Figure 1 (cartoon, one colour):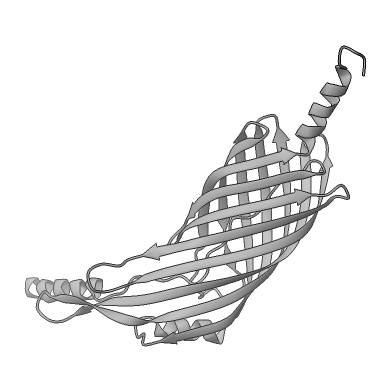
Figure 2 (cartoon, rainbow, N blue to C red):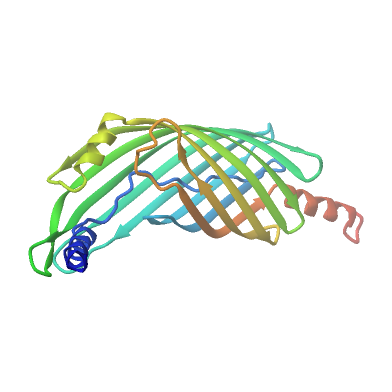
Amino acid sequence: MKRNIIPVFLLSLVFLFSCSFPHLYYTPVAQNVPINDSANKFTGLVAGSFGAENECFEAQAGYSFPTHIALTASLLTGGTSNNAGKYSDYSKVSYFEGALGYYRHFADICVFELYGGYGQGKQEHVFAYNEYTGGLTWTWRQDGYANLTYSQIFIQPDIGIKIKWLEGAFSCRLSRLNYEDITFSGTTAHLTELNDLQATSKSWLLEPAFTFRAGSPAVKTQLQLVLSANLTNKNLLTEVIRINFGLHFALGGHQAQKNKVVSSSNPSPDGR
């Protein structure tokens, strides 16, 4: 029995080290949730985000019009790098989306919003794997590359609450993810997953998100948790949880109206 332990242990080591870094082929963007409670309000966000693979910079902008119509835009860019020595292994991702929506302020502290939008993204992957070469030696090898472009059409309702210096919101996005171009070459360790991705290039995603903000009326810190579930292609390798943290800005709108009311109630000394 004891004599069998050594070969089992060695085989376990071979299995452990003869592997490649995991690559994920979809990164959820931070959901744009302005919580518009009035017209003529500009909102923005700068944040960092992270998940199982990619570390990203994210930026958002939005504007609310007097007719309860709002526009939003979001940007995500970043990736991860496992480069070391003579081999390269990394992923890069970039994504941009725009949306048109409706907002309604009710019950003094509550806001309902509904957005529909479209986005375009791309990913670059370079692979490497660790090959067992005998004895106690493992050698890193290059393993080709993959380039992806994709689009996303989505609908996103959200409901938010604003209480003095605190804001919170729940949003839930339903989107159609479509990989439009998938090219890869020279890979063996990731060949099966890329073939599967090419065979099932369209998916429906359900993505709930929880947003929390605290600070002054103009600037607040934001923490958001985004979950992503693939409803039609559960084998697709994606990031299923992401967290973003940054600064959220709000200019004009309700605060500007308050300042206008205060100034009108305190006329100048000459009465004008």
